[in-house]
Image (cartoon, rainbow, N blue to C red; front, side, top):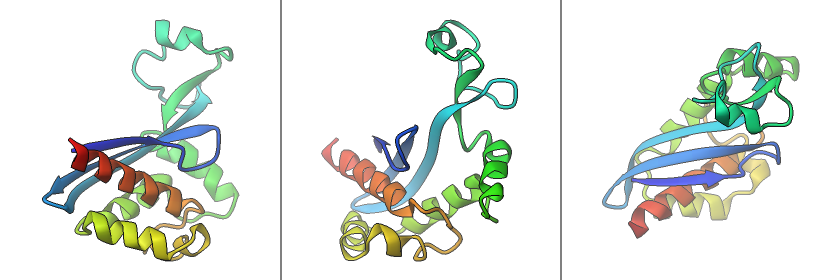
Length: 146
């Protein structure tokens, strides 16, 4: 098992990528991303309604999972023209890396740019596919080092 906390998309959130390796093959993958969202409209991370949540300057916001709050976050994406939910985008990226070796994922990243990676993962329409795939690579390298 390996994990990476990664700045895969902009500067206002962070991704958590987890992979399970069997030998050097990725056999399981999980991706989520966290950012501040309105408390009244979303579900925050555990303890965001307790002491942990009190440390944030804007008390109307809480740190929240994009996957758990897919309907809310995807509505914002739809306003920008997206037709795929954030949860389904993440699922497509997870499915893309499962079955790849760590070397194959690294080769994919080496041979593609962030611009071309947008269109190379079937079902994922995120502009930062490359960043999320890089997070999986970092998680795989973490697994190899354990």
